[in-house]
Image (cartoon, rainbow, N blue to C red; front, top):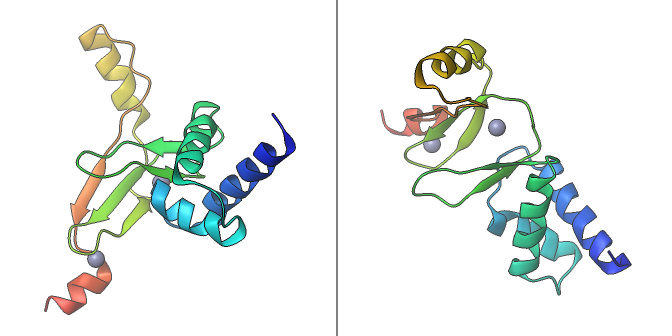
Amino acid sequence: MNERNTKQKNIILKVVKNSCTHPTAEEVYAGVAKELPNVSLTTVYRNLNKLAEQGIIKRLLIPNQPDRFEKNPTKHYHVCCEICGAFEDLIKPCYNLNLDEKECLESGFFIKSHEIIFKGLCPNCRKNNK
Ligand SMILES: [Zn+2]
Ligand SMILES: [Zn+2]
């Protein structure tokens, strides 16, 4: 990998790490473009996917929504606001490892993980909806 590519990759990683939300590739691109005005969205996509394959960041596949990326590699659940699209980590309920082990026995599959995305209204949207 040449120097330019390494620099791009490091800046992309930095943008994901500094992001407290779960940015989409386009949001990461917007952050990266501030430092590297010539970078293309394709380059950002390619690097994000590579970083996710290497397990350095996590890619979240969300039905009917663009993929999101995050720095937190631990298994956890998410909550999504149906109005503004806010997307956050949940501390509780914590990830249920039992569920993976139990399903493993009954289905014959070897289960590695599961994803849960809770849906509803964030505190801001709740306030505005009263
Ligand atoms: Zn909201
Ligand atoms: Zn998360």
